[in-house]
Image 1: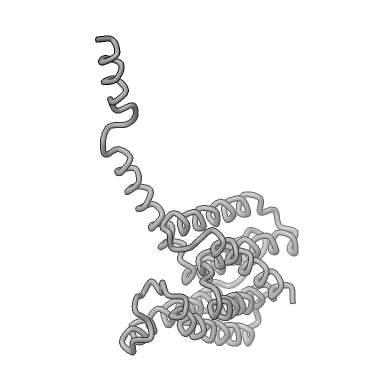
Image 2: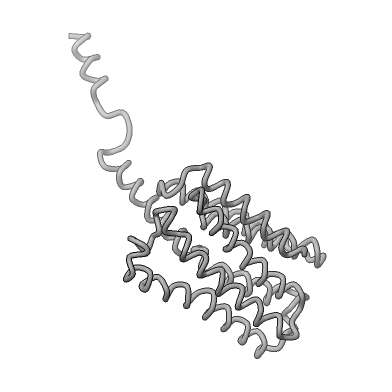
Length: 227
């Protein structure tokens, strides 16, 4: 009797209620997708410009009209036009999915986006704006272009590349402008970690692809902004 009781107790569920783990997995997946969408690399130039425009004692003195013009250029050239070209690529069977899961299908959209980024940088260079804003615009174009080149051989994470670029941006602003941005730096690093974790969790990339993307974005952004 004692042995039967012991055997039956070992077969009893020892952890959560059935379905709890699956529910937690769904919640984690939803959070990962939310992070992926909110911090999609296509939005990062906007986030970067907003950050630069609102850093205390740096560029908050810029006229509101100038900020609106730059923001509008970035919104149209770096966000709306690259997104608007995706249906055309899909119609021409140049991509099979808007998620661009195939490494080879990323090349043309990324090269097209980098062209729009460089056009934005040229337009911004014609305005009387702080050099850091011009450097950020040019460096962002370089990051997208290099990511496109890497895609010829490797499916590096574009999300991680953007995350690395943002970390490099806030660090360079902090060091070059002698600005106290401790909490901004911490926040950007934490968000970057969330983005990279989300890409791995969703199995969109291997850890190596994510780390390579971050390193590429960080390195290219840092070098281009220091030129």
